[in-house]
Image (tube, rainbow, N blue to C red; front, side):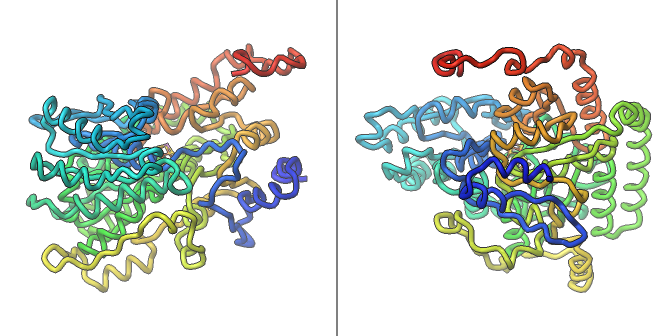
Length: 532
Ligand code: CFM
């Protein structure tokens, strides 16, 4: 019996039917790897997913360093999102940086009963007095949506009162399936009120946006270093270590590179429709992935000198890391891994693990959509999802003044046919037959799969890291990188290889014995403090 069925057979028939649709035993020969995704979790199941507010404020907006971001809600929503995602940012000469701060309206019961708009206005006044920001974002949390505070009216008031830019985001946590609903809400507002407003002159024709790169552990910095080395100008990064001015000028670039498809593909498509800038799915995680990405970008720009520089940089970067990578590979070859993160990383990190000879036996997304599993060719077949009922999809028209093209229509269409542009093939094509792809993996399934598959390492997040480790499986956090990084591009690959080699070879594992293997659980001991 395969491992997937052993896990599923422990469910009652109703849950079995639901969860079976979210699990696939990969078979790329018959191409039948259809998976259910982006639907609400069954109530009662302990999911690992985050909320809509996490996707909007935490993921997409959070790294924008010079926008002062006020969370309208109870303090817990701010406190638990404060500094934990490790999206790094540096203050620029003359620029603002609010990343280290936590701004909240700290709603109390009386605000819930009598309304919180007054308090929100007061918070904005206070923020203006103390910090004089040029941009304020307001992000709402669950109770705000329930009581109906009009944060958009407050944003309009702030713009008139103080002459600043103030944008409101109705990203109440309960709205939508998970973080991905919040990405969409953030993206809509950035498209409406930010992108396209800049008029910076871009002199370098090899100009790119890096979309879906949030500079976790410094990944974005390493990617930018590499791109600049080849000769590209990075006009904007969405949104790692970004500032408002860069985002406003994103429409000026000649190509958008999409690192995380899940969180940003809407923006990439909208920028293309409105301003004529095509997008390319890239992957700067893994040595081979990075090489392929650099060559693909050079192919788009189609310039002999740029291509030659690309090859020279690849050779030089490889020289710098080859010895280290060979050493770590000798330590890691033949190990197995399971990866479960929010979206893209469960795909991207398989490239890096392959470079090191580590085989991925299970991978899944918390909230990926079917196209991130099966490729964009699936989009016409996907039914409207739960989010489409309450989250608006905006449409845009070409902007006559700002629309610009780099390639001829013929060359552009050729690259689109080759799937070099406007395409993402998804996770499953890069997985091997007999491995498992699981959507919205829950706590119960995590434990069961770990027991049955016995991977050497489980890549995940803080919610399940310690369950795995107490059971004797090394776990590294792929969301925050456990205080480490960068892991992107060539040099990042060495950091990653070093961290997992240290983890696997630490003698600590020989001392770990799961408590349930030695101490019988006595009736009546569960509950109260000790079980927490
Ligand atoms: Fe994209 Fe991300 Fe991810 Fe994501 Fe995230 Fe993240 Fe993630 Mo945590 S934007 S989907 S909502 S790559 S915060 S930087 S690590 S779950 S796999």
